[in-house]
Image (cartoon, rainbow, N blue to C red; front, side, top):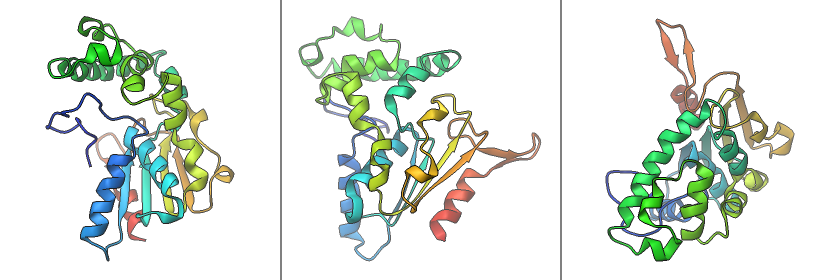
Length: 229
């Protein structure tokens, strides 16, 4: 499932997607459940989608439509991650991502009264340089949050982990350039049905083993193994 506006189709609304937007995914799962009522459903989320997935299965609790879930490189504490990526070499990644977000937002001005909706002139969009700035200017107000801090607090998945009732795997690397290791829970802080697999290396959705001349991308193998056992 693509977040709205993340595939080739443009999102036709003034609003967009965000890390805590679980309604679209829930509707998609409900459709699958109606279409294939006897099928066991599992889901895998990556990065922002991993945070959303963990939040979703936490919200569903014992009424989950999924039997298993895998979250890879999830920014489970959004405020800490937004601050972390605003320092050091991580700012390079942030600049690339925010530029793309700015482009998508600027395109909305042609079809929607964005200035009246979020109080920002189109020319000011390209001056947004960080996730904090973008989320304060657009993500928070267009989705009903009072501020970027409010959005981060309500959309972070870490607070929903204790409510997860299905077998869940969280895969994360300590050298992820997008987030500090402090966002990770300890195993005793999550239910027994939630497993943490933390590697020293792996970057952000990387997880390459083997050697320089014979690399092994083991992430897909591990996910498949987890879902089939």
